[in-house]
Image (cartoon, rainbow, N blue to C red; front, top):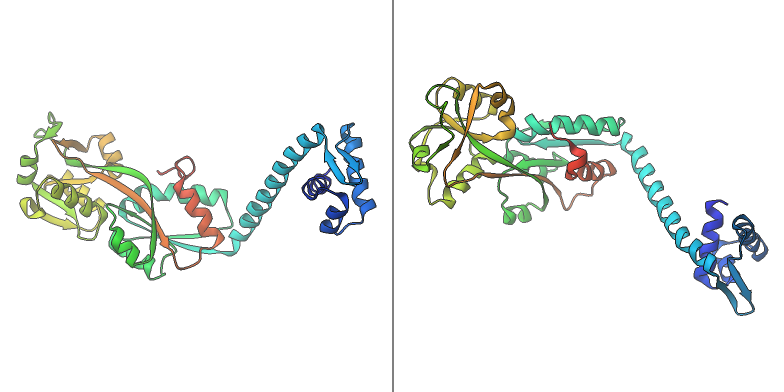
Length: 306
């Protein structure tokens, strides 16, 4: 038995006659009949009842037809995936990621993707969320990975498709010194009176913080914003040195929290849900490599963020 014989059998069942199926398959009737006979000999059972009015499927034939349909479908999927896989080596892809994703999540994912598709040419650049949005809209980037709240109206204007891929959280971080050693929670009023160090405007973290404050009837002007810095590493260094507190992705401070150089506190009555999103053009056609990476990064079991 081979797949071509099963395909021929399924075609006969669909057509209802050997003559019609033979025309569809561009075979002679005797050649097609021989393939059906080979199948019947292989399974040692009758698969079709033949008459002047055509053919009728036996119970064994119905079973083979059911399995045959699945075999043909699996074969088609296999061909498509192999074609996609072999074509990836001829394609390049530029990915843009916002700071938290690009610095603390995506490097491991790209490493795993390259292990799975070693011929693929993947490059990554890091910028803030606003810049990633603009560069994806302009076609400089094939795919963007951004963080923070989404402006759906703006995305529609920019003709971008956005898919949330996971949810992170922001935490308030302080120096790990005597002042904070026994604290686990602070009030919102305390937060507004502490020297605050944040990312610059246009960053996803900044937008998440501002949205959370607005949801609690506060503005950024109500806080003691002392510094705006463009990198997470510089923010962490300033907080470790006792120059203020910050609100930052937990993903970005896992190492410092584990080593005890920073401390994370909750702010009573307020949360900072922080979303990671993949974006790409809804106008520009996607290549096989881009489609494969989008499906890869959307799947939590495959992407393996660091």
